Image (cartoon, rainbow, N blue to C red; front, side, top):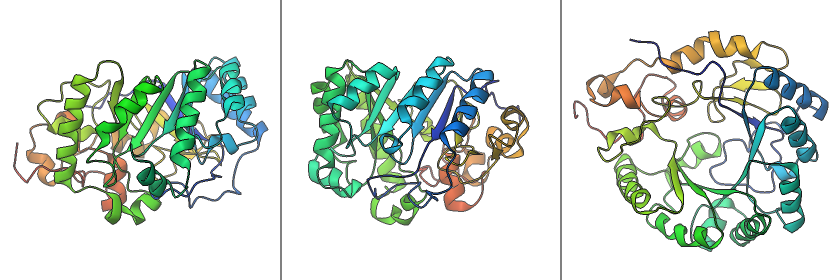
Length: 338
């Protein structure tokens, strides 16, 4: 098999500054992480120095809830001074007008706010936080008033896949630029609660069929996905920069203690950014090589779109099967079906 394409430098590093959070979301991949095993601010500045010397262009800050981290704005200011553009994902609960002003002044490229249902009650249930839906909308409004580019992330689950389209009019009201429709990840609490919230393969097919129609007819808001199994649908006509999963090809993940993993949803440590050579890991890691060059197994070996899908989401496959090369458990194709 030909070697898979990957960039010389990751396009994006996803980084967690702290796993502390004011929510307890039903699908959280990181809620059970050790909150006390975190780098100091001075150590995080060294991380920025390393990434800057490697010419990493983008840094996305997740968590945990980034707005709880006391040195967030100093961290971003330092990163931007080194030429790295920063984005952030937040639940929006703490994002009042003053915080929005600080975000604007600090120079974030964009801010992503999580909204997991167009219905207030369902969003609050999924996020285990009463009032979180209203707070998320207030956050969007505060960002709009400060002219900060905003995106919204929705994790698709049984709570929202029947009416996810109803979020579009809400986003228009707040001038949201982009909607990310994320597949349900089976990591952390997401794994424990997957029976309650994850869709069946047939439901994923139904969702993506409808989502592609929504994308086709929505011109003012960019609708984006992060799931390689979309290639199973003939109406999916996009040509992503890399085939299959993007982790280890376009991106890497750095945990709050400096550990490097392929992505935030795959708990496999490749090394530590302050102890190991991250460039060497990117170029020579045995695990990344496996992820970049999947071997079709079972029904994948007879599937006509494997060369584009490459077996689907490797984090989900690994978490549910313990292997990398098995077919994505969300795949709705039957054995031998093209």
